[in-house]
Image 1 (cartoon, rainbow, N blue to C red):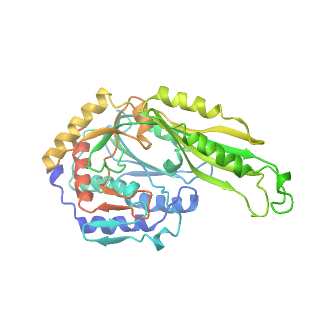
Image 2: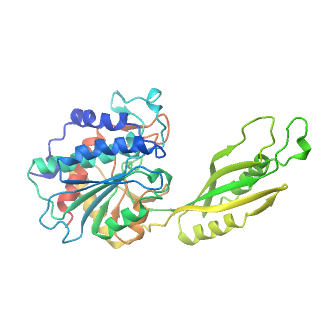
Length: 377
């Protein structure tokens, strides 16, 4: 059978995807993420040998599945890598339930990236049912911490990638349905200002506000943004009582650049902010970093041409470009391993309460991935 003509049933795909969406799995809730990993492990169990990998650093665990193949473990194969954690806290379903409205389906994490992951599993399921053997062995790896920079599973992803010839990442497709063949570098920073407490009503002048110091630094940091490197602060924690001058303020900043040298310069500028501001101490420490994945790698571009040919046979044009916003493709691409990212579903609103997918992209992406699995050799 032609893999591009596999009988994907959209209604059955939505029914299978629904439990994944309704199993909320915010990164910092390890138990919730592990419940999601249980669902994925069950769906993968019919495809091959499934292994649960314990979590560490306070995060949930991972799921790895190896499909039966005569060359499994003997030759570099194909790795499908995706994350099952989301940015949405438990309870988001109350305001963003799984629902279908016309050709759109809503739900937390449905675009980023449970929809694409599920389409990948369905592609494998249909290939097996049709008795089709992929030219190369296939491994699936689902991880728990991508939304916070992959601090606990980067080593695991890179180890699997080094055993692979190709890496497929079913992160969300571009708005035009295109895929990703490179990603910008990203660095995270932990910020802390340390002031002096006092009673905000009776002894205001005796204190030094850590919030005031942080506010001044946030403006300075974000004004460092230029065409080559961006800076933003997205998280702030401080204060317990409005009548107390804050003694601590913590924040997190993100920097992104298209070139590694520009990010390195941005890191230097951020670390130079250590010191004092308005009488308070200010500290900057490095967080996790994603390296630049350059968009000009021969192996990746050769794989893209294969994907584009398959898409054309399916009736659509698959564009490609480098993209901002990190993914685990940064790691595999930076290793020089042929990687195509953005193979997941089409949609919009990721990381918001309007997150949704175009329903027709579920079978579309499943067929695209099935075609790639059968042609990559």
